[in-house]
Amino acid sequence: MTVTGTNTKTALAEKIEAAGSATKLGEYSGAETIARFSDANAEFAAITNSCGVYDLGWRGKIIVTGEDRSRWLNGMVTNNIKDLPLNSGDYNFLLNAQGRIQGDMYVYSRGEYLLIDTERSQVEHLTKTLDHFIIMDDVELTDATEKITSIGVQGPKSAEIMKAIGIEPDCPEPLSVCDLTWNGIGISVTRMANEDYLTYEIWLAPENVGTLWDALVSAGATPTGTDALEMFRVLAGVPKYATDIRDRDLPQETEQKHALNFTKGCYIGQEIVERIRSRGNVHRMFTGFMLDGMAERGTKIIVNEKEVGELTSVACLPLDSGERIVALGYIRREAGPVGAQVKVGETTATVASLPFKF
Image (cartoon, rainbow, N blue to C red):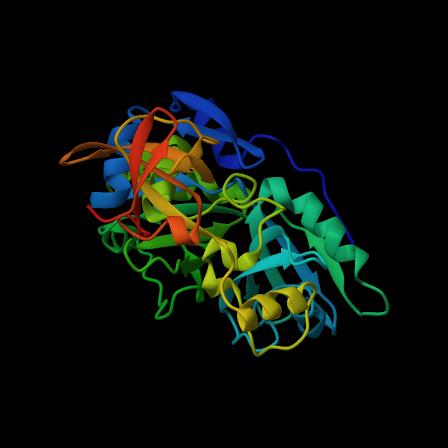
């Protein structure tokens, strides 16, 4: 196992701060990056209605090498790694023996190696946990966070903006990776799996990130910070590890069915996951809430004077129709059908399906 020290500030944040372009920096997922450039509401509008560009340097990268890498990692995580086609990926949980979630990640098959993409805040823990299970296997884990950074390009005009600077990726399927050369710079482009919002990630060496950023902004992409990304994450109903997904949660409670494969064979925690599937649903479920007033993360959900759940994320969305307060959280299944009215702190809320639709 090789773990390199990671700087707190992302490579792009350093360049943007040096140029005096960032209004506000902040911590996000284990890294210091740009929280806001100007107005978070305008930045949210860009990534939902036109095209925004943002720093993804808060994502970490772990490279898995060795002859046994595919078989070994397939036995560690919840999705099918062994049969991944070349240059494609999938979403995964890492569980403990009790079936509780210990982390989440995307895994990509990259030919001679597997690439784990996760939040920087999870890199050290995931690396040490996975390394513990390398016994007689020909497997090596290397933290490549300082060698690979990435930029997000999102919105209905994102492909148009990328084409304007000469990037035309052939990503027919979500989570497929295209390797390209742009202005003499090697880049890799992948399209994320959210069907409602067009999103690309561009991976490249940190020393080239400023050049690519400047080109995208010059072509019309709106610089966007993590404040707007958090609004979008809640709108899209995407749970965040350590915020919405905790180490006490079970996979089926999170409703992230795309993280589970039931035919791949054994992995850590698989017995619990299979037992839940065979016996029926878990008691709690992850869902959305439309609030009539503001509430804080952690606020309990009450039905008939009984506690039936809690909020895990809250956002005030600046929509064209006006501001809407929405939240993510967990509720007992019998108390939380879509459309149900619940009490949340001093306000009320309606249970909503995810992603939110307005």
